[in-house]
Image (cartoon, rainbow, N blue to C red; front, side):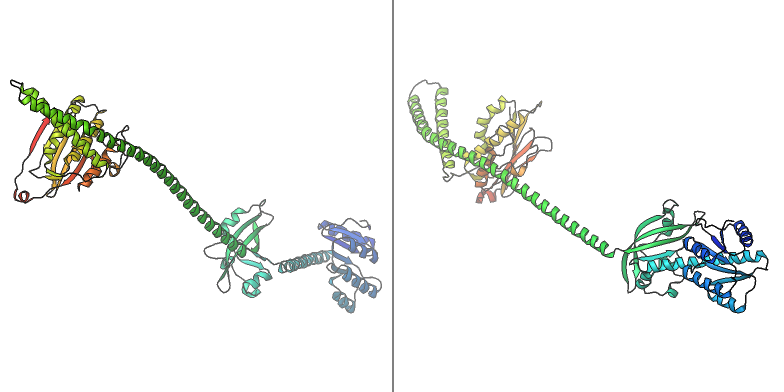
Length: 548
């Protein structure tokens, strides 16, 4: 074995002996045990070797002078306090042995003993060195982790805590004795369990770190959130021996995040509500604009109708005089023809009819002027059948042109109404003309319009105009009688409105519904004109007449 300094290796043993043969013998024995051995014969060279190598054991023989041996041991204690020392000597007094043991010598072995004893002593010294090294490492680890501001704990795979730093002990107000045997689960919030089995499944020899957030119990019923950074510690067979966790308090961050999230949610809700309110206001504004445009169009239409009304009133005024003249000339002709002998009766009848129609035309024009100028109507007592008889004369040619039959059903007795007959006739004509227009595009083998008079109650009479047309379609019955609402695409939308105005002026009402068998039913009601005779007369009459 060379006496020169070798490179520093692990499990290094230094032999100090002046006798080269002893150094060589011991070196061979120790190298067979797996140690790296360096042999030197000079104490100063031994100190240099201890300085530049990681020597765990020094085997030295006693110097010639006992005091030199003690002085050298003193220097070893100062320069390499952790090195184990075995004093390998031929003879050693009790005093020297005692002082040597006080100077860090772990064992004294007589050279006269079997070398096997020396080998055993070497192994014990190495084990003692390893134990002291582990203790020093744990002390350094404890010193470091106790100075940390975060919690550091170590626990077995079954949850038993093996180490906890000072921060953990202070946080949970525990002593080292109280911590002994504690399980990590005792400090975890029940609603936030630490699933140790799942955690162990997360680890692999190549992925030894896993992070998670856990809520923990603190003294005084206080709770806190900690972010756990877990590291698995494996043995040589890739089995988890322990888990080391560093816990960082994130309670403030969690609650700040929750507060921010709640504020964001609140702000989002407020923005959604504001957006909804703005959308509703925009929609309402758009509807108002649409209604305004519709009202402007209706006002323009009303303005045109007012002009037409004024023109109609002027025309009626202008036509009234020619019609009066026609009536006078006709009656003059009748008087002259009455004095003619052998005059055919048909001529006189025609002249009388012409006189009556000119009078009727004048009445219509006067009613029209009264209606436009809002003059009082001229009401008289009639039956509905009497009023409708004159309507038939005007409406039958129109019905025949369209191939439509008219059926009149009268379920009334002698009940009478107090009305302006000309205006009620206008209502009949408007409703029947609407029925004809509704039936025109509908192809049927038999086209029929039914006019039904019946009593709604003892104080009200009802007239139903029943057609077989296209029905009300998508029109709202509640608005059909409004101004400018028409069931006919080419209609002006004033006919039904005029009907409602006339009927409501007489104390009645108008309404419309779809007929169950197709078509529509337009109805109006009028109040019964009550007299003494009507109360006494309880008879009833019913008739049905069909015109082709």
